[in-house]
Length: 273
Length: 206
Image (cartoon, rainbow over all chains, first blue to last red; front, side):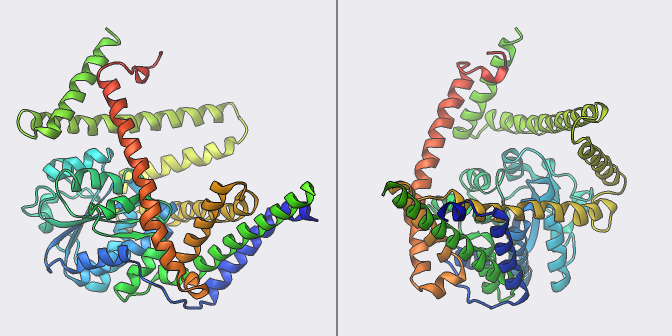
């Protein structure tokens, strides 16, 4: 009996998880979301930037992690546009460019912002840490054109901007390397820029030392962090909607761990006895 | 000479990059910018090399009709289609490239990653065992953080999110910091070995 339970067909576990996630999405419970301090810190930092200032966003992720990072990127962009901040962006990951652009355009429509005047997307350049280093001193030589091959001299937002100096804050949405670590190493540690980040839940624990040392001004971690940021800007979106499903999925996994261990201990006891 | 020239280049570039960090003035600042630009150009060629290798690998698989050759057809077809549409019409919103990205690549990428949740659930049942004290500590911490980081944790016990935050802020940060310092020391020592020519495995053949 115990052996049968221990060797349960994994498709049963898959089916249970799928059912719970689908039910939670179809019938939302609206569980209350508690906002963590790292997410509040990033919100407060952006909130403190005067309207009309420049902010730099880096979309360092791909479709595999868009479920976590897209909602937080959209929430931060909405926050920036609502505050009339001017956004320049790039992607250290090639696919991040278009994912970021989609979010920028979506938020721009809502707030009546114009490409080239209120936001620009510089695109992708291979090199990671070297790209950060390059734009910190000479943005124009690294990105003579934007993501759609427009000359950046034709983009009014970048008039008179030659490096990262005018940007009050850099926020990276990161699913791995190159990403948060490199922005902290170069933009923060070397050039003294304030850096905040949104990261996947898996990565977030690795960035707590940066947060504690003040090298990151804020941290939005995983879909939970994205939901927290949506609550902070009072614009509930996909992350808030997904929190019920994530809650129940976590509960299923925790139940699986406990159930598996109880059977394991019972079996151990019966075989030793 | 075949080995000495790369070693000399590595030594000069390595020393300049170290020195410019502490003396960000001319001529080191200029050399730093020049080396950075060279790196960006070389990185593009590395990308091209990877692309050519990928095409050769799958073309060979296709020619020999190896097992799974159908996937190579899809890969090469997708590669040609994205390169062609991107080069001809650009990658902006409303272009064919963007259509492929939004309607094919995005859902496929998201689906592949989403499958992970199912394997984690299955693995958590089969493999996450409290076999000893270390494993038990890890298991208890994982359960607290997993529940404490989602809204349901607060419903189960309102202290759970606080304990999860404490675990993340103190034990986790201490552990992560130790790992980071270890990695940093390892990187410094490895870099010095490379710059001084002691470590030569990157040249191949040794």
